[in-house]
Image 1 (cartoon, rainbow, N blue to C red):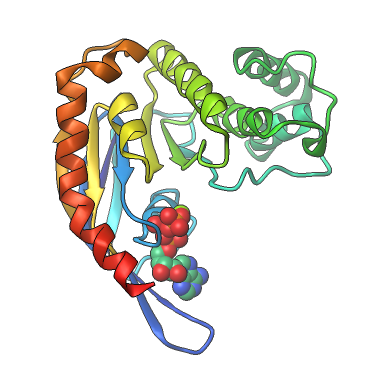
Image 2 (cartoon, rainbow, N blue to C red):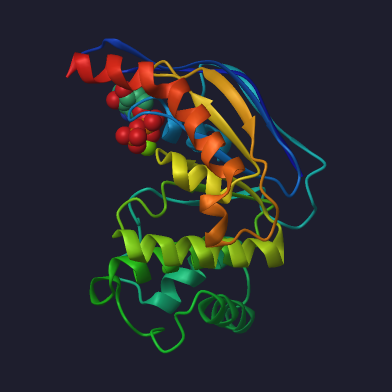
Length: 257
Ligand SMILES: Nc1ncnc2c1ncn2[C@@H]1O[C@H](COP(=O)(O)OP(=O)(O)OP(=O)(O)O)[C@@H](O)[C@H]1O
Ligand SMILES: [Mg+2]
């Protein structure tokens, strides 16, 4: 399934009635089976864009279209920036949540959830509650919950930003391995340039708020990705190129603080 974002704009009205222009004229296409990273400074509208694609947010202008959507599968599922698990549900209960929403029968739901719990390395933790898990495990639950419904496109909002560096590296490896098997279309939000280049086929760089597309950069690395590629010239050059693109934006943002 292709995801076509066409001239999208979003203006919020804040508590005081003032307009906050979050996105302005964003156009972007994510190809079927493509892994696209969406990179941009804090507050540039990344979550807004993802929420709009997920249909969780009314937009001010433009539209999101899904070309050749598969039948019988949800269009999208989201892994949220904050883990957003239900604290009163166990791991199993959290992973089953989306399946309940789809009206799946209990036995099938349980079976499906167990497969995803296995896949995401959570076996043995089915009966635990979120507060009994480490940050890395909580995020696995978020990923398992999203994958359980078998979405045509997976939307991930800075899924690993709250994790320590080592856990993040491990989770990146696991997500890449999972994606190699499933090739689910992914739109992955991050503000980490290295992470974007290491994981994605293409990096879309957003400007400061209101977010606009500054550049789209193809990543010249083969699949499957390996850690060793992080020393290859193609990787280093791409990171450098993106950094020089957003340096001015970052400087201007700092000056405003
Ligand atoms: N409900 C809302 N009402 C008013 N303004 C909002 C609302 N939600 C977001 N904003 C503003 O819109 C802009 C974009 O927010 P958004 O959360 O999409 O950015 P982001 O790129 O995801 O930021 P971060 O990197 O911090 O997650 C910000 O200036 C934010 O303060
Ligand atoms: Mg955000």
